[in-house]
Length: 491
Ligand SMILES: Cc1ncc(COP(=O)(O)O)c(C=O)c1O
Image 1 (cartoon, rainbow, N blue to C red):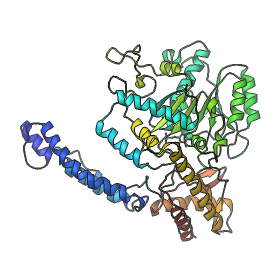
Image 2 (cartoon, protein in one colour):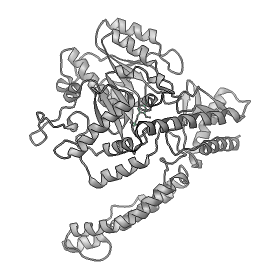
Image 3 (cartoon, rainbow, N blue to C red):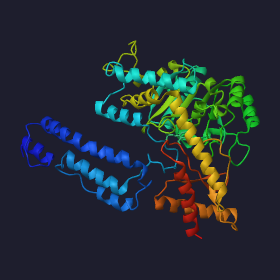
């Protein structure tokens, strides 16, 4: 088959084209028209589509086919994709998804993110995209203002809070090595002493994953807990720090625990850490947003004194996945930890910034477009309104739980998460754990809402997290009714 014929077959129209470029330019014109309707349907339908489309598993069977020899062309491929999505969509950006901690998209951020793809902006270094780099630096400056962090902190955009924790803790490890007189990014960690890492039982799974990746090891993290829930035992932490006798150590502060939204005592931990030779890392993936609203800012007071800070954008900032941010006190540590050089790359001595050399990713998309656009569109006040909207929704849902005879609140509601369980009465805690576990699966299979179970102490709970501007009072009222309805069906 000739080159022209191959290109023609790929177009799916039996036509021939002089070149792949000619074919693709033609396809793009058609796609622009096709996308106008498809995007409008996808976006407009978000409020009404169920959280999970029923029968998704069976619908996805169609994906299992061999690699086509000659494709069907863009138009048909996109039509197929839309069809598959219609039958198996997860409406995670909709108002009824309360699983994990999943934010929505503000209108401005959604549009800007689509443009980042259309422009295919590569935000590795200034030379390849001045706009990508400068917009990221500006958006990071605005985020520091939004969260009240020192303007002197360096920042970087990454895929999410896991990678932001990676940046913070890789910088911490670099600092710790230098305290001992070696450059860990050059020598590696083999044969070195163990880096002490101290935290509470609120530590997030992603932090443990990061410590595994950094060669520290998950089980080398010391968790000081005073109860089953994992609340910090600060006296025990203090004793452990005293035992270190000035040896450098890392203290991780958890600003926002995923099951109830409770915080470690931020200021007390930092005060303690400052009396010893410690790096303080704060995981504020969603909890840092407390600093956006005076109603809850006290929970995260003191974070500005930390050495490194994690926060997520795809959670409570309501920008598209994936988007997280790390802030680090000393850009030099980031540059040493993430050094990246080769003859063909940007020179380390170029005064123009190379963001790919202060973070884990080298080539990177322009996450900044969405962040800049949403902060420009809605400003400090608009984002405070999103945060406070979610706080109100959480309180409204907690009120539904209190009103329903068969629902039981399982923790205070300081933030945007409501820990509760289905409790029809007359069952032991162990029986309720089993019932709620089962109900969790039934709620997911039902598809009207997406919410998962977890544990507080020994007890199984639901932990809906409200982080999306789209969620309305009537959505959470319906959610309470659905949990009771499905719970009753299991009795
Ligand atoms: C406290 C905390 N840290 C880290 C993460 C990991 O975030 P991501 O999935 O964006 O990497 C989460 C996710 O829920 C979180 O709640």
